[in-house]
Length: 505
Image (tube, rainbow, N blue to C red):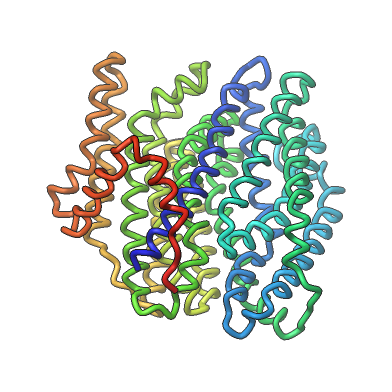
């Protein structure tokens, strides 16, 4: 199991570097998006709504195909036909994306009126639809790279896309003055370039194949996941849709800024772990130590997650002042600890839900996420009129907790895993106290404020030690890690050692 954990760490680090690049690009653009020379605060609110529309569209277009491909790719019965399974998945996705684009693009003006009560944004919505259609195709190819553990190729191609999208976005906004249209045109071009660059890799890993029974089985497996995917995205974006309906675009803008900052945690930590561990979690179904492996994945990922939550929450005030020069955006700081903690439960859900995937109980996942989405909608309707963006943030936190707990409860019934829940509770309580403490320090002068906040962050692992959080073997591993990586002269050889890690299976 130790080698598997090391492989997971290596791939997580590689995916993490790519995802860090994503957030660096996103954070670099925030000062431009919040600059009144280029966008008003209402236009930033429109951007937030259009971005989440793109997420909903991409989830709808995916049709559960990435998950079906993942499940069938490593199926013992079809292991010799992986190229055929990939071809069938990709060709289906091409047809779905093309069909959706042909149907939805003529309705762009209608969507603009529905969302913003005027047709002004129809051209931008057309670009959102195109970008989502191409991204859905990209997701299938990305899934194949993950399944083949091509983490380096995955990161390089996505880094190229990021650089392309960033360069084009800056060009279209700063030079061409294209506003929101330039942002989404850059995404269309960037996604299309990646598909073209990976065309050779795609063809090499494809074999013309179609089997009606396999196609039917994959769709029976994937359709509940399609509903789950759409509902899961809605669960993550319904807060902003609700704010758009119940409040001003200004509040959508504030919430969007806070969400962009906290989403650093999801993209860099949660998504990196999911990308690295997803295929391995499925591959280890029949391993004798699989349950201990799954348990430790939850504990260690939760530990890293909470450390990130504490860091982002503590220094969110300083970060917002750097990113958004306008004081209109500074009030977003009050909801960052709440939104950050919601991502803790997202991470836990991503791990514990694998019990249902392993047992092929995808129908239960669909039911759970639909229930969680309806609950989120109800909570937003109830809390936003009372507490505005704070109400939306609390609704998100409660919804993600419900989503995780339902997945955990039903996963344990069909595939029991001895998770270390006591330690998770200690993590949650300690991290929450430190995260919310930041709100009490923001009124201090800069120097004492930074000293106190840094002390709080550094104290996090030591406070856990007081609660007997660490096992003796984990303390030994931590000491060994510190000793190994603290020797600067050995940094290159330590990096090279990661390349030599091989699975024991």
